[in-house]
Every structure is written in structure tokens, then in C-alpha cells.
Image (spheres, rainbow, N blue to C red):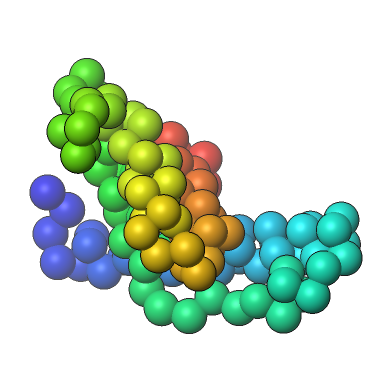
Length: 113
């Protein structure tokens, strides 16, 4: 849909924007809750970019639904369902990192940059 150069450009934008959003969320949570968990948590990996891509694509497939395990979810809400499902399956996953990927995907998908 975007071509190789477009894909690399979007991946780079998703990477930078999700890191910025993640750091801002972690800083806000560390200030508000003053817990050691948020003060010393860092994101490692590429999954925030995967969540950003999933969110961006979900905006392009509006009006359809995704079949999850036992229920159907509209594509517009599927990133949040994936976030919850990922958190249930792997409890120690960085929730804020994946949420920042979702927010970066919406930011780019809605053309807010």
C-alpha cells in the first residue's frame, strides 16, 4: 500500500513518536504515583511499533470486525482488545509501551502530525 520507502518512513515515525509518548507517560506516572515501578521502567523491543502499525491499519479498515477468541471486535477497537489480551497472556509486559504505540498509530492515522 505504501511501498518500501513509505513503509520505512512510517516505521521510523512510529518508532520516534511511540518512544516520545512512552517517555512522557512514564514521567507523568512517576510524578503522580511516585512508585519505583514507573520510575525505573524502560521499554525494550519493537512491539510498540507493531501496535502503532496495527492501530494505523485498523483506521484504514473501518466498518469491519475482527474475530477474537470468543467475540467480535470492531477494527477501530481491536488495538485495545489486543492490548488487554496481551496483558492477560503476559502480565509483565510494558502496558504503557504498548499503549504509546496505539496512541502513536492514532496520531499518525488521524493526520495530527
